[in-house]
Image (cartoon, rainbow over all chains, first blue to last red):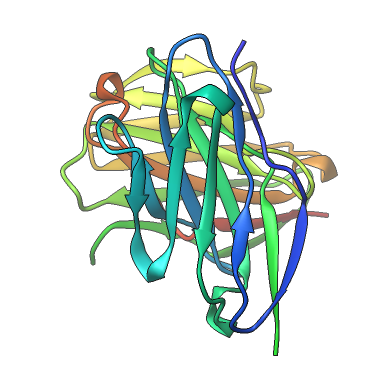
Length: 112
Length: 114
C-alpha cells in the first residue's frame, strides 16, 4: 500500500529562518512526487514536482525539494522564510498507476 | 476565466435540501476529480472522471451524485446530507489520468450542513 507521511502537523519558523517541511513516502517503485501549498480559503496550488532526472527540484516562491531514494524522502525547503509563506503544505505521491496520495498536511507559521 | 473554477464558494444547506456544486476547468484537461477536505484528515478522493467516464468511486455514500456532461464541467449533486458531510469540497483536473500529471485545483466550496 502507498502512503505519505508528513512529520509535524505544525511548524513555526522565524521570518528569515530556514523552512524545512518533511515528507516520507512508502512505495515499492519510485513515484512521482509533488508539493502543494494551500492558503486560507483557497484550493491547492502546485509548488513543485519530481518525476525523473535531477533529484533537486526548484519550484515557485523560492522553494525547493530533494528526492532521496535511499531515505524515501522528499523534504521541502526554503532558505529564508517570508511572512507570505504562512500556509498549509501538502506532499503528494503518484506511484505507477492512476492514483494520487496526499499527506495530512503541515501548517507553517512564520513569526515576525 | 482561467484554471479551475468552482461555484458556489460557500454553501449552507439543511439535511433535507438538494443542491449542486459546479466545477469548470479551462485547461483543456481530460480528467477531473472531486475531493473532500475535512479538518485533521487527509484529502479524500471521492470521484474520478476520465474523458467524461467515471473511472473511480471511492465508496462514497449515494447522497453524493457526480455528473460530468463534458470534459470541462463536473457537478456534485447533494441530497439528504448529514452534518458530518460539512467540509471543503475541492475539484481538480489533470491533463491525462494515466500519465500521473499534476492536478490543478479549484478554490473549493465550503459546505456547511445544518
